[in-house]
Length: 330
View (spheres, rainbow, N blue to C red):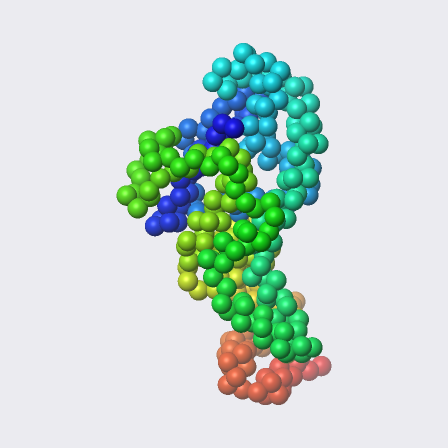
């Protein structure tokens, strides 16, 4: 099986470069082409793109096939037109493309779903431990403690065991180590990168990426806001990703707002404080001559009182009494 991917990993800079062949739409036809000038992306980008795409949806699988599964098309058209496609370059009509795409999906669709689920099981392991630990806190403390210890001791090297445990995550026999870095001549390659790889399938690329992460110090995380997987290249436990979520703000940018809303939902006093704030703000806009000063005082003193409450400098009772004292008396 001929290689259709070339990949280079740099653990010093936490980067990956992937060169691959794909079908490119040109007018009403599709032509095979090679991506000669790929972008340098953060380590694990291909894996994250795969994990964050729901492969149980037909349209997502078909988009992925068109982008990354050139070999499937080549196997179809090379079989039908052996001498027509010299150097693996060919052009097909849109009708041929759609028919072959349907054929590929029917043959490999379930494989995509299975491989997707297997690699997600590896990525979600940390959160499986966390859920069991939290769910069993009050029902079975021993089980809870066991999974808390598992969670605390989880390391990237554990991914190697996961590759053996989950079916469908292992490598094929077509991974080639390339000491000449063929295809990467345009890039300045660090002496710490011993070789690149030539591979035939996307599954091998997923497998190699997991192995690279196992050699690093970074775990795959899941954003507590958008739910997408991400890899934080830092040593502390990051809960929010750098993906754009709303406007031009990332989940990480919105983290303070998210945390505050969560506290509002859990803490009735903070909710009461917020309601009073909004009431005074509205009354100030309707009748500023009477209520503007009261609203400004609430903003100024309220920020201090709320901060004191959150930092345990005043009791819940003291904070509630202060909120009650700011009521507009009729």
